[in-house]
Figure 1 (tube, rainbow, N blue to C red):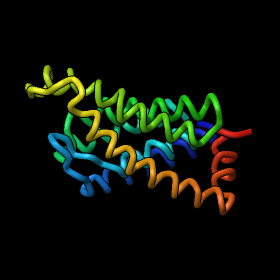
Figure 2 (figure 1 turned 180 degrees about the vertical axis):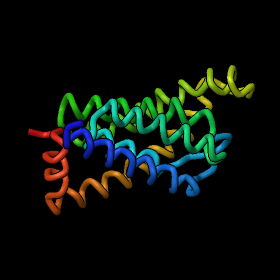
Figure 3 (figure 1 turned 90 degrees about the vertical axis):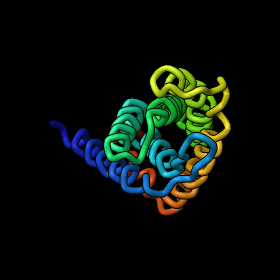
Figure 4 (figure 1 turned 90 degrees about the horizontal axis):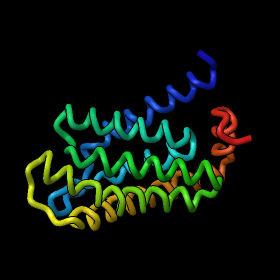
Length: 171
């Protein structure tokens, strides 16, 4: 295994751990639990590791949270779509603002809509098509704001560029 892959897997493991450990901090909004730290982790992963790592990490974090009883099935579509959109937009444009927008639109709108069939068919809940959009938007806006602050601090100290070079996501 190459050194870069080991670094990426190590960072992915650390970010998954942050997402799982911080799952005790959530905001109940309607029928869903909103986890802003998960969205912060998604943005950091999308920027530093890319879309596929970010999506895989969102899946792993959601799975662990569900196994521990701190999450719900709604975590899967919400977090995975947002992480994927964030990573894809950043990979394509290298613009942080679009990475943040990808997380917000991917989780808040697309993920919120994707939760409808999960809630109705897998969880047996009655729900309207747009029932999860507002709660997911609130959650992802909070997480994206935390990510903006964290990424901004990394930029000011030149650590963002150093991380990207070490992980070979920026040339």
